[in-house]
Amino acid sequence: MILADKLVQLRKKSGMSQEDLAEKMNVSRQAVSKWEGAQSIPDLEKILQLSELYGVTTDYLLKDEMELEEFVGKDVETVRKITLEQANEFLELRKTASVRIALATFLCILSVIPLFILGGATTLPNKPISENFAGGLGMIIMLILAAIAVGIYVYTGSQSAKYEFLEKEPFETEYGVSGMVKERQKEFHNTYVKCNVVGTCLCVLSPVALFAAAIKDNDFFSVIMLGVMMFMAGIGVMFFIYAGVRNAAMDKLLKIGDYSKKKKKSPLASVVSTVYWLVAVAAYLLWLFLDKNKNSLSWVIFPVAGVLYPAVLGIFSYVERKK
Image (cartoon, rainbow, N blue to C red):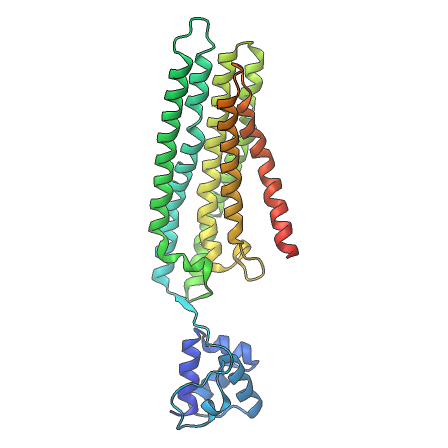
């Protein structure tokens, strides 16, 4: 095998185009084309650079009789190529996933509202239901909604499992993919902005329900307004997730934003988020079952956790950058 054939084979195995190789070697694409077409031979300095880049010996490059690669200290990194068809399929999967994830998250938020309302009903003068019945039914509804949400999360994850490598491995896109994704992101921009505006407004306005509850001195009415507040906030979160998941998918293919080479998303961030909210739910349930006060304020755990959540992520990101 001659040098030209070896250069073509090594470049393809590395997942690079001629333009990529030319950029790394600080030469023109035409020079690379001539090397691979056996129209010219790289000088000694370029041979050494090619040897280091591909991790093979100079003997393997220069000796025609050597057919098997001799690696020096590192393997040739193979990079997956994303075709136009794969990119379209990935974006469609994430579009569907954005709706499912938003719905599952809304169900998680919604799951605790029946528990609040049923618990508040026990404070009414005529006591339409007993405390045990209210607590039992509320927990059953909460667990059913949570189970449905978890099922949606798992199913959605399984649908996109084939593209998990986009977050774990280096990849390149074929010609035309970046242009297609940029065009779709441009078309989605107005929807992205509107969803974030609506989500922000709903989350900011949701506490108005609690202020309205203060006007009427009634414990059960206050519990109802708490449910209204969480419902509004849940709808707002749905808008955030729908827009965020779709936009993140396009950022991922374009390697921009949180998915750029300089700013990769830490996989630990999702772990921190999961643990944080599990601890919040555990604290709420513990308070709920241990507190014998009929006017328990255990519900404040979730608003406080929501306010502190950005701060926790901010501290985590700061520590990660320092490392």
